[in-house]
Length: 169
Image 1 (cartoon, rainbow, N blue to C red):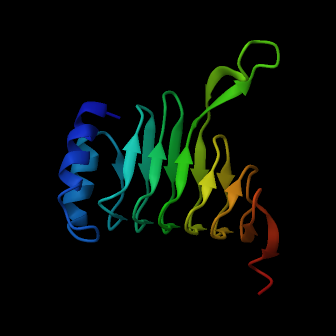
Image 2: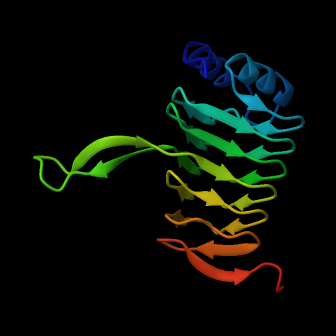
């Protein structure tokens, strides 16, 4: 991602209406090196940071105040037909735990996050680095996702746990 262009985009987004001018926002995101598909809608208050790869499929909704942070060499990949509700946190950066040093904060890690086709992420969800959210999975509001989520399942809670199979409903 071209971070200098993304910085300018952040300034432009701040004066655009939250849920309007989606075509302009897609165009500006593409200039910054973000891959974004057709008819995907990103709200103006979304924060995008880092220098990693961000790919967004077709017909994706990314709601207000979502935070996306991808650090090189990792990526955030959001497949088509996904919904990301407001105030969701998705990042690729974390640290190893240093058990012997003066700080618990060990060496940095950058791990991919993949959200597969048709997934629905509720509001105020945190998706930790290195995880995959399966096809048509649902993550309930306020969940902290610390393990992969299987396709067509619903998870929720802190940490997120299995609630039910979607296919059984």
